[in-house]
Length: 215
Image (cartoon, rainbow, N blue to C red; front, side):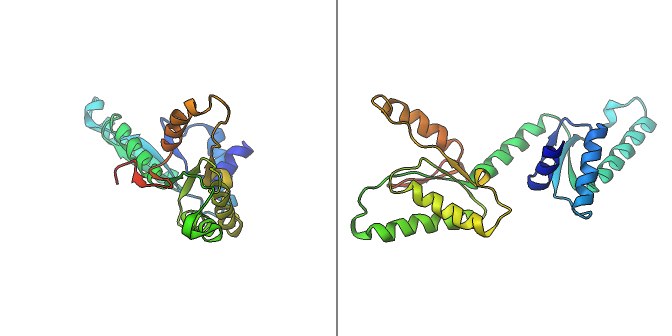
């Protein structure tokens, strides 16, 4: 229960298929609202809009509409905003749109370097560190394979920004996946790289920058 309370404060929830009739959840939402002085973080839920075809009479339909609106207004007290859909099938399109928007805020930085050419070591490392710092500062997340000469500077840039904003957590802002090593490791690299790219909407490597999701 304590862990859920903490998540309701730190994270944004989307409630699906939830009736909000569980007294335990009601208690937790109430405590969170009190602890935040009546200004809880925004969360969201999806309800199917009452349809006239689902009721035997106009009176039953009107009653259901009023009951649903009262429930929506009550949830607002806890910071839960309601989206009404006409059909349950609409939820799939909504979730896809949320996924696309989430991925567009996640950037893959991939690459490795032993020599930096005309840039020089200091300038190149400062660039990678600064890029990572700026991405986090502007509300993005980063995925990295911890490549030689690149990964450590990604971590440094992320940590510099996180230390300035203590409310942000490292595991929420950075996904770090070091590549496997060994005699047969290269056979796994392509599948491993594709799995990493799947987390991101933007992929940047040492040789190219491309979008993996439609803007």
